[in-house]
Length: 289
Image (cartoon, rainbow, N blue to C red; front, top):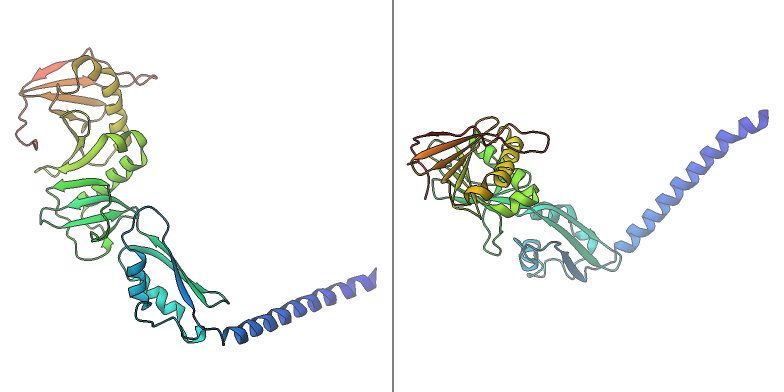
């Protein structure tokens, strides 16, 4: 038993030494073989259905079109520098480049995924991706995403994070809408009015949906869904010019020159109380036609 305890750590150490030595020999052999390998081709993989950047653009960045890679020895090609050149492109989220022993340089591209197209009050257009980063429009591809316009002061100059609180609210609203199957199909646009409040423009119905800010957004949209289910079938989809969701547990339907307030305190089955109707005058001149 005592001898077994002595030999066990020795055998483990020996096994590690053999493994390390084998790895060193293998890497040396690979490097030796690689030293004579010449780049024969560059293969570009761009998954997805949108193409802000195409294979030709990648070839131009890497210098493939100018024969800067094909014909050169792999050991003389700095793959890391090539990756950095690709990552400098505003439409590329991630780039990975590696070479195999057959002389093929493989390029894998992940594009940025826009969820929002902002048109600010300075006539600047730009996208916002899933990570909240701004990126320019593309000459190659137009993304079919939620649009936002109106009194938006967020400027655009380069790939950057959002700076103004309003733009961050717009992004939060767009992120919430695009992740929800129902609202992604129903909401076509976000409009920012003169009071710097957000209004949602639906695909079905002529009304504007005033949500104000992105605070308690899920609760506001749950109230809207309850209003759609309970009130709209009775009054019709084009009865109200504005549906106001700004206030907690209330849905206010604004007609031309009048306002109908519905207490939307929800029961367990998400129904709304329609017995407390209050009619009053309401100025709707700020609503965008």
